[in-house]
Length: 469
Ligand SMILES: Cc1cc2nc3c(=O)[nH]c(=O)nc-3n(C[C@H](O)[C@H](O)[C@H](O)COP(=O)(O)OP(=O)(O)OC[C@H]3O[C@@H](n4cnc5c(N)ncnc54)[C@H](O)[C@@H]3O)c2cc1C
Image: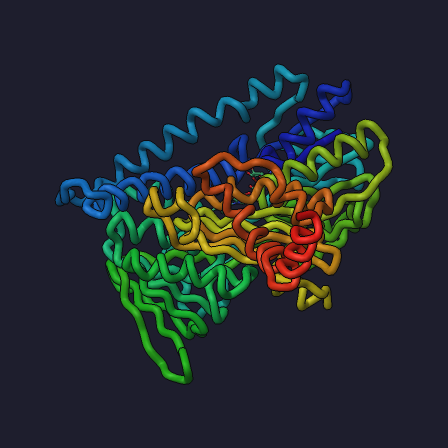
């Protein structure tokens, strides 16, 4: 097997196939570990943590502690910590580790010579199975004046040495939102320009609104429904012109962050030459993750499905099952969870109201605010809520949680949605007190409470008590 790309998808496929005895060649163009390790999940979560600690230190008086006045941050030190964390985790993804598992690792730019042959440098390699796992890159919107050196993306931001005085972010998806919050909390003046009418447009509006409110409290200006008409850089400043509510305006900053979607890394592979079909920059796949040439798989971001590390890894495992073990089955995205790691976090699994409406799925919502959770009160982390969607048989269709540690809190629902459990099954275990996790029970309580404690039931029970004496 030849695997192109050493990110989450390629590495999972490589280690599984090699450990099952396949002869595996992994070709990586740049750095083992891919986007997640170097430019994505790991640095962004590390940066958010530093920003969160600094933010909390400035909130000491809210916790009955002395008010301290803190100096500004040294971004260099923060980014050194980011690089340290990357360095520690990178051992797990190193070429040496994979060679130890039996994978041959080659660095270079691969190119298909024929459907089963690949050229890397001056070497030609062939295989009966090929996996394309080359990931994605930031896509650049067609904005007049957006020059290649006039902006940064997630590839450059973690190498900044000085805190941007003022940052303009284009894009209100998870990447733009997380990075905007981190920099706002570290002290940059942030303006987030978003073309959709809410940030995190995949999420229900009421859930995303909680994150948006916090962003504003962190000092970021969030402008939704914006159409950007031009960018102009002059020396140290960048001006972004936009139209909003039919009014032309502009905003000036020192840094421009573009986080406006992704494109598949497919351009240098000669896919047209061998007849692998693409959807724009991404590679189309069937439900076994095979491309239009069945012996070539496309997994991870490059197939343009759900662009998350856990999905890339799960797709890599699927290839191990399908290609190395020859097991039948298809890949399903039905119960893919995801989390935006702002504070508060926003976690989602299964249907939300938007997806239920789009697919004509009937549902009822069951909600509880974190304000009613004792642990949230004790911790001073009350913004947020849980929203569970159930069907007519009370089975859990999906759950969204916005609030502190929502990414961890969603786990009981993840199990509930995957196993098609009923709401009662999710609430029935004894939850330890006081935990944020009790929010599941509290939500279920709002549903079952009125059904159990109502005048009709009281009347029937009164009759029974009287009858029994
Ligand atoms: C800022 C940011 C934050 C994110 N946070 C999260 C998060 O918290 N949780 C989460 O689940 N996801 C997150 N993601 C998404 C996550 O990073 C991706 O979904 C994941 O990295 C996809 O894995 P992959 O293996 O498909 O691609 P990648 O990790 O990008 O790996 C692809 C590899 O292929 C190599 N390559 C590229 N072209 C070629 C070529 N022609 N030949 C050979 N090799 C090539 C690349 O160098 C790279 O090493 C984040 C992304 C960003 C940008």
